[in-house]
Image (tube, rainbow, N blue to C red; front, top):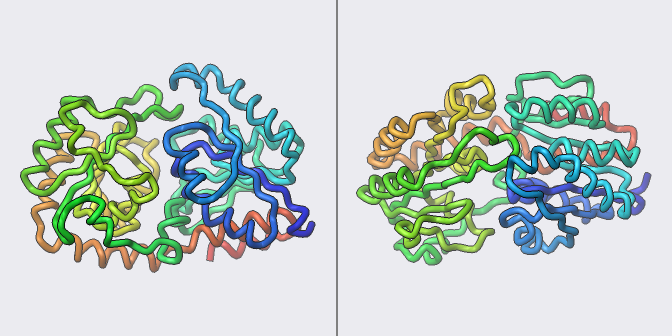
Length: 361
């Protein structure tokens, strides 16, 4: 099959997924593939795709996280109905909706995921997807179609091949260059795999800000709304500039797993607060980032997390230490976007088995 005949469909649900596929899609377009995007209207996902210059078709999420779980069939039907009109030769996405849509259309699929705690979704995806790609930290083996790679999804857009920090972000933050600052990320934890978990309470958010502003300038990056008491701390930069702010930050304190990994890759110390820490469903990515590279710290208890974060922000050589740790991480990992691009292109012909061997080196 020639590149000009390749009609690909990406199903993109979140801003993180938009970032992950950005350079892969650019490479596919450059190589002559016909790329289509089906995007969920969630957060900054459509805005990011527009900023990348990608045309897309949107679909709306269904209700709250509890209703979405009950209405998952409706979600699949929506994906199928739109995909049927596109008539793709291959469907790519983060897991189950891509695999189900491809199965309904009788087409092959490539599914990427790294959430080990989405057990039922992973099991269903492994039964339906033509190829499954995960980081090599992924513990379970998902059958003969499962391929592991030496990298995280965040390296698809934060690898030095694609990301160059821009110091003019200080001007956008309205602080002096080199002035220490902390980013606090408050996630809603409203995805399907977060059911039964809760984000930080308003009182906890306010308490965190008060503690950290004694040591550095504080910026708050909320996924949803902010309590009025914290509105003046809001990180007010364009949605596509967050990684520059994260790179120069002295510390991230977050209940977002994705942003924690992003900080580690960028060499910014990160303290993660999350209810799954210490449990067997906690992805091994975070164990590797903490135990092998020393780039993050994870806590289930907010009090312990704050204690560690204040200890870190008080260290004058903190960023220099993390720069060295970051170099070790990057030396061990691959250019994920390039691997995903090659894998997808090989999935359109007979080269998948060869790719399976090459990508793990």
